[in-house]
Length: 488
Image (tube, rainbow, N blue to C red; front, side, top):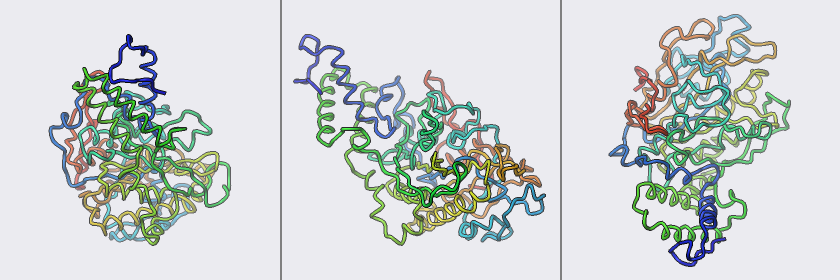
């Protein structure tokens, strides 16, 4: 409870330094909602704010980017790079079907996606050495991180969303990046406390450039059929963080916190014109806007969508997250990431298919993907937003060519795929060729840095841009990547 009676704070007037700092902590603590720390690092160093850093707001063919992260490592051999003439222990159980792009065949369990491949660019030769279930590489382009890391590090590079926010993309009354339906690793934290997979964070730019993380309470369409590597589909909707995310934070209490901060503003009047305090005010105002409804809560309100459209996306948590992503695009958010998530111990896995690979794909992963991706593409196209929205679908790695003794495929970062649609990307392109068992690129290898560089190019961001790390040293945002030839 605040005890400030005036806008002047001094020890002589009865407010101790300890009480003053405690009041600051109470007020600012309410602004760290749902994992979205807007304030804590806002007074960190003498860093330029977004407008100062760029001098102008970048512009490109793409105004927004949507990532669908197929967490775990999707199997290239069973989805987009099938090898029907390979030995049985490599080619697997599925057959291929013709797509709308002449000469291109993909898995039989993606018939709707097959019908839109003439609109897509398929990269079959994504390769790197980052053997970890973290989206750090596909969101930053950096593949040299610690594969054992299960929490983000302040020295990690910033992801695309953080760079978008730093450079001032997007409207002032919305976050520059949103992560759905939860932070990566949330669904595993009941079994592995403390896990929070690196990737969608501000990194060395500071936590004020983290995305807004939504929340979820998944249920399942069926009883789990096995304790791990099961096929139960997660249902539900992502929810924005709000007052309910802070225990005991009522609207009245929120208003009290705002009043307290106004008094603290008066106490800091002597330094209010400093760049650090101006940044603090910016993030404080954003946090209050999120907490007290407004455009962000409207974007999450799926009751505003027609039932027929909602049915097209499906009832899965990831389908509903993708529909929210489209609404966030309409609201002007530059970067939205949707992460397939393992929810334990319910037996609901995504693409980490060390066992039961074919059942997991056939009964869970591919039906969900084949529902939500075509729905998103058609929805954006009908609204005239597809050419200004770049969708990219990939995982952090591929899967091993040889099927193991448990009908699974193991980790294989040496070869994977990325599917890109919209945002000015050239449609109907298949880039790169793999060897006879999709183990290694045969031609045109592509790194995660190349993918991220291509995305920056479409956003109108110079991939050679250097941003200051925590010590002030200039660091590249694209880590040496090059735009993928023929895609832009």
